[in-house]
Length: 351
Image (cartoon, rainbow, N blue to C red; front, side, top):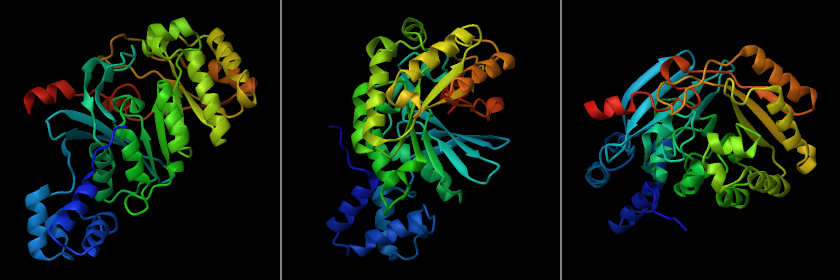
């Protein structure tokens, strides 16, 4: 099982090695998560000598990632972060009209699953992010004064292909650190069965979203090659087990790709797929997502036909399927679903 020390564990270990009292660690954590202080030098509760030692050992700031580019549009703020090895990832902060903040975070630098509609896959997989690099994306926004109302592992990469995601979930839900309720966290997956099973047992209250995008096995394989490794029916059986064990709803993400998967026949097949499952599909909820055009994806599709989107929705709704059409944010700054790639290569070459 993958296990590496987090920065918080390293700080605690370091303090013990230099014979600091246990309460010093609590003071540091209080400074970060209660006072929103990221710089060790500004943690006035600590002796100056200790602050200097911490800077020498861990650097000036608690963050392990640096913002190198930021873009904003209505309700959206996207940040491109530089990792310690100079690789980059993107994170999106969303501000909803109701007043809460949600954050779409990355789990990998790039992705190697090759989904045809997704710009991130064009990068290829550089590497998995560490638990610190994952959670620091959230910490950056928190230190800027934003509230952490919900977090979604829906940024760059496939979360369940990175074992560090489980350590990151531990950090986010730790009552002494971020203290997020598992019910305020969503993990999205294309269907990595062994780690869906691990989610079921280790984090049963975290919301799970499954990227479906086609109810037909062969067509799904043509769109998402991972389907050959984890076939649709096997994934759905695992999701049934997840519902059986946790009693929680599973969300189904369905990107409407014009001329590919947006027909009424597809809608009827989705109904058939879900109705035949545990509790007659009542604990599955379909999120219809309009396709977000991007020049960086391997295959280009047209703009979603609103009449087809509405017809697809109505077909599912009339069959008793729980369904919503997801609101679109951030298309103009390449921050929407499937677009996280942005200026990655251009900035990588310049800086």
